[in-house]
Image 1 (tube, rainbow, N blue to C red):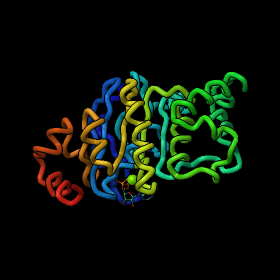
Image 2: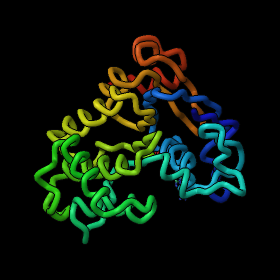
Image 3: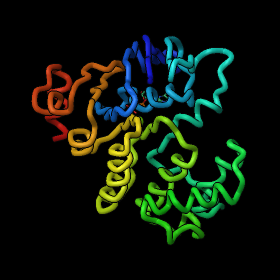
Length: 240
Ligand code: ADP
Ligand code: MG
C-alpha cells in the first residue's frame, strides 16, 4: 500500500532523513519510536507532502506521490493526519470542524456531511458535543474530535504524530482507546508515539528511528523483548 525508496529530506544544510526504505501493507499498524530530533515528524509529513522530500520516492497504492502531475489534494484526502496539538478551527463548532473538509473538498452536501459527522462523533464518544466550540473541550475531547475530522474524509491511511503527548495523563487512555478501535477495524495506521503500551500491544510492527534512518523494523515483541540494535537498546532503557 505504501512503498518508500531512499527517502531523504534536508532543511538547508541539515540532513534530517538520510535514506528511508520501507513497505507498508494494507491494515498494518506501525508505531514509530525513537529519540527527539530523529526525524519521525519529518518522515510522517513527507508521506502526505506537508514537507517536500529532497529526494527519493513514495508510492501510495501505486501512485507516485512526488510525481509532477499528482493531485496532492487527492492524496491528502486518502491520507488523514492527526497532530499533537489538535489544530481544530477555534471559531467553528465541533460539527463544523468535521464537516468542513467533506463539504469543501469532496463536494458532499451539508446534510450528508452532518449525518456522517454525527456518526463519527458517536464513534469517538462525543455525540453530545456537536454544537460546542473547541475551547469548551478538554484536550482528550479535542483530540477525539480531530480524529473524527480526519476520518470524515474517508482516508485509507491515518498518520498520527504524537497524538497523546500534549494531553494530561488522565486523558491519554480515551484517545488511545479510539485509536485502538480504529486499528482493530482494519485501518492502515502509522503512529509516532511515546506510548510504549500502544506500540507493544496495538501496533503489529514497530520502527525504531534514529538520526534519520529506520534502524530497526520488527514485531513489537522483538523490539521490546529482544532489540538487536545497540541504539534501540539504549533508547528503550531510558523510556521503559
Ligand atoms: P522528531 O519528530 O523525531 O522529534 P523532527 O522530524 O521534528 O524530529 O525533526 C528532525 C530535525 O529536523 C530536528 O533537528 C529539527 O530541529 C529539524 N527540523 C524539523 N522541522 C524543521 C524545519 N521546518 N526547518 C528546519 N529544521 C527543521
Ligand atoms: Mg516529532
